[in-house]
Image 1: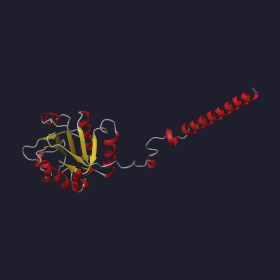
Image 2: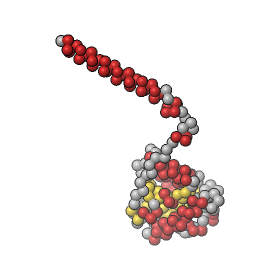
Image 3: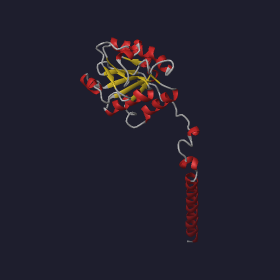
Image 4: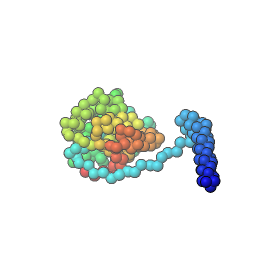
Length: 222
């Protein structure tokens, strides 16, 4: 009986010690302002970039896929303002050429101040290729959804500039309409940090993460 009593007492002491350790750990955690109380501004320099997401090869059906070429205009895509956009244009042009050869729907967009004439000549739309005009979400206030629905489109490939503007805004708009989204990372452009953030957002944020595939232009097959 004494042995049982001693065992019970030992168990109580162990439980008490464990509880004290847990309480102390919680106290340390929540009393540490660098972990819980600091704002993102306070901890800005402590943030480490997450692991780069995987780029995947994709094969698309041209009959149910559309290529969206967003805001490749003289004002938004030039060597002074956005040199990475200029560098992306030959790759985008090659994708347009392949898409046209397969009879795929291609839709262009303009910024709110753009005109069809301001689109860079390397990626100029054909007369029969539709052009929409809006702010960052190219679905907003345009015929884009109607154009895609009438053609039975289920997947959109999105290229253009800026990554954190038209590309992200239109990808979110596409996700809200349950369209599959393919984003070749070498077909979107802005400053490096913006491209990195948008790349992370597309495959991690609610709304887009289950519908988005990241790839490169040379990894897309028709």
